Each structure stands twice: as C-alpha cells, then as structure tokens.
Amino acid sequence: MSQSATLILFISSLLAFYLAWNLGANDVANAMGTSVGSKAVTLKQALIIAGILEFTGAVLFGSHVSQTLITGILDPTQFTPQILLLGMIAVLVAAGLWLNVATLFGFPVSSSHATVGAIAGVGSLAFGLDAVHWNAIALISMTWVITPAVSGLIAAAFYSTIKYWILDQPNAIAQLQQWIPWLSTMLIGIFGVIVFPTIAQPIQSLIGLPIQDISLMLGAIAITGLSISALQNLQSVESTIGRFQVVSACFVAFAHGSNDVGNAIAPFAAIVSVLQTGKVPTEGFQIPLWTLVLGGVGIVAGLAVLGKKVISTIGEGIISLQPSGGLCAELATATTILIASRFGLPVSTSHALVGGVVGVGLVQGLKSIQFQTLRSIALTWLVTIPISAALSGILFVILRSIFVR
Image (cartoon, rainbow, N blue to C red; front, side, top):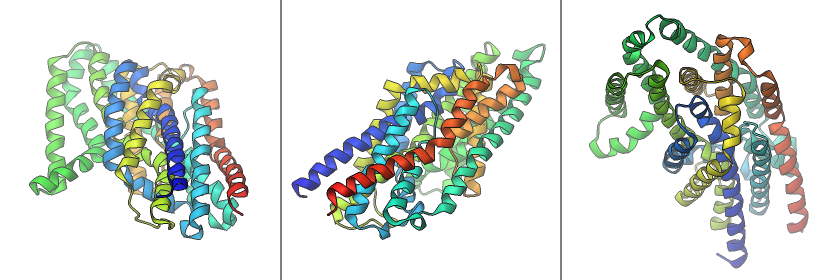
C-alpha cells in the first residue's frame, strides 16, 4: 500500500471511529435509556452491559448490515474507485457530525437514517437523483410513523395486562409469583427469536445439532434459570420485575450491536475495499474483522463519554419510568422489530423504543407524558435524512473539487 493510501486509511479510520463514537453516544443510549430511567440498572451497570454485549454483537455479527447498506441505497458500480472513496469519506463526516449535534442536545435519532441520508446525498450529487433507490428511502421514511405507532400499541397492551393482573391487585406480590413463569417465557421467547439463532450458529458447528433445537434448548435453560432466580429473590413487585429488565437490557444491547455497527462501518469498509483492491466493492464483499472491532470500540467509548444525555431523554424526559413500564417498552420494541423483519421492513430501534415509552405513558395517563420533549424528538427524526444528505453532498462536492482534476 502506498504512502498516500496509508494516509487515507489512517484518516478514514479516525472518521469511522468518530462516527461509531457518536453512534454509541446516541443510538446505544437509546437502547439502554429505559433500563437506566426505570432504575433497573445504574448508569455504570448500563455502561458495562452495553460495553460487553454491544461490542460482542458488533464483532461477531455486524458484517451483514454493513454489506447491505453499501448496495441497498445506491448502486456502487456507477462510481469510479476514487469517487466512491471520496463519497464514503463525506458520509462518515456528515453522519458523525449530525449524530454529534443531536447527542449534545440529548435528542435520540436514528443512526441508520443518518447514514442512509448521507449515502443518498453523495449518490444524488455524484450521478443525479436517478442514482438513488428512492423507493428504499420512501420505505424508511414510512417507518417514522409506523414503527412508533405499532410499538406504542404493543407496549400499551403489555403494560395494561401487567397493571391489571399484577400492579393493581390487592396482593400484588402473590400475583407476581404466579406470573413469573409467564413473564420469563414472554421475555425469553421474544428476545430469544432475535438473539438465540445467532448464538446457536457457532454452537451448531461444534455439536452438529440443528439451530432450532439449540435455540429451544437455550431458551428452556434461560426460562428456568430466570424463573428460579426471580422466585428465590421475590421482594417488591418493581424490584423483582427489574430483574427481568436487566435480562432484556442485555438482549437489546447484543441485538443492537450486531445490527447497528453497520451504520458506522459500512462506509469505512467500502473505503478499505477500494484501497486494498483498487476496485469498487460489489454485493457480498468481505468486511474485515478489524473494522468491526474498530466500530465496537468506538460505540462503547461514545456511550461511556456522551451517552448520559440521550439516556436521560429516553429514560426520564418522556415519562417517569418504573421497571414494569421499562420492561414493557423494551418488549414492545423487540416485538415491533421482529414483525418488521418478518415483512422485510427497515425499522429504527430509536423510533420503536420512543413509541414503546409513549405507549406506557398513555396507559398511565396523558398528564404523565412530556409532549414538549416528544415534539423535539419528532423534529429531529423529520430532519435527519435531509440534513445528513445535505451535509454529505456539500462535503462531497468540496472533496471532488479539490482531489478530482
């Protein structure tokens, strides 16, 4: 690799780390906000949980999303290697800057929307509006309305059930004791569909059992262990439910890391591919493991340094959360993502989680919801794609005028 290529790799590595840093500060904070806001875990515990599980999910299972982002928004084969390289540098800077600004104001935004918008901005200015797959952009935009609405309805249904059968009963502890096996099954069942198949894949290669059998075995062990632990330490209703939310927080962190690291690594992986091969990457190109490690480290560092602002917005700024409400919001988020995945719809964890929190608030009463916070969040959602597209487009034009003669 030449000296100029090495310099470009070094600079783009720093930019990818910067984007991953801001993704951790904003998007990962979204995922952990309900658990911290409900006091199920402390901020320090959330940092440890997210640090381990987000990093593990990102490194082990983050390559698929990275590949999809490169080829799903525009056709990279329309680019020359030099133009694609400059474009992806512009994407890294634009998406990172917008997430940074949103995080400083405590607004939870979608890192996937920021990256998608930035890639669309580069494609539009490089080869015109026809170069962008606008049907994919339209589908993503529809999720701004659909995702929080569906998640809110599911969270309201979950919370209404827990409220009626447990929280509002004269002997809530006795009712909870009867419900613990069902809560364990619901929690492990919903999150297990997301997490267990990915855990089961490496186990399958060792023992040869089908993934479905391994997933069922892991699920049965988890349900039994969680039920026994909760029954042996049955104290107050909310503190016991808080144990369930710690488990759901672990699942959310792992699933989030395996999915959303692609938002930071996809543009960087394309740059690495161009520098190594001198060609434009096509569908199915390999994502180097070290780039996923870089993204994982950046995500954890960003959450640790700047994540508190967004955690406060999700966990405390919309409604006052107890573990029962936080658990329902996370269950609704996971269920919504599962439904969307079944139909192949791109959704945002941020949007689903905010919708779930609002759904809990609706059951508690309209007075519990801070509508001013919601208006600010909705505005940042609305402007994320156009702002990141404009930023990346402007940066791309500047870079092209300097380096392309």
